[in-house]
Length: 265
Image (tube, rainbow, N blue to C red; front, top):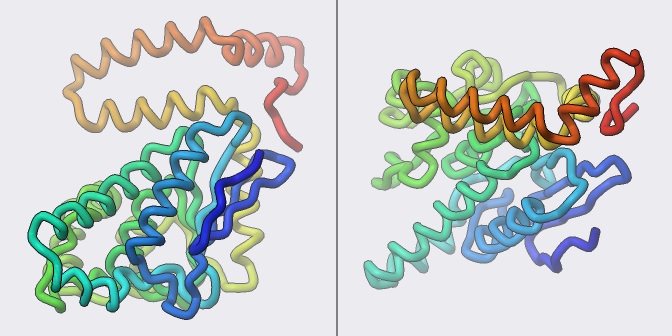
């Protein structure tokens, strides 16, 4: 596995098939600019197509997870045409979608504060573990802007009522409140962050990767379809699962009281 060359990201894969994707602009608190957005999309496309990957851990270099949009990038956008601004905005939307739709679980290792687009980056994670000293804020309306591209993921994560409150007031959230609102999954002291992420990985590595990928798609499908349609989809996909190598291996291993081939210890 040879990751693509990247300037604003660090990307490596360990022997277990766990990739670590690090936002690497600590001098700007890992703020999103055109280069970082493009490279995140490039990295996500590579991760999605790489066989043998079991999970991706997303984190930030330095003391901040992601400060949202880079101020210099925003100033440049003010000088562009409407068509150029729409195109730049759509690049951000494509990047978030690519991360959201990774076939393997995306775990947020939220090592510090996150603002604006950084909250969107947390929201596309399947699981997120955050340090207890972090703070979070959807700051767009304070700048006269709107949280447009991140809104589908933040609303899905927090629910409409909580999204309204945090979007409309730019309310600053502590780590504890972010957990209560559903933005992050777990809050731990900084010294325990890596151990908490490893606990999540330990659980994931017990699971069949193909079944995990299919289940991610299942969740997305049933969330956007009515019950009768979801029942048909679910029956069809369960029949598919019984016919996979993983399905046969999992059932055989269970009755033979042995570990299935995919299980990592």
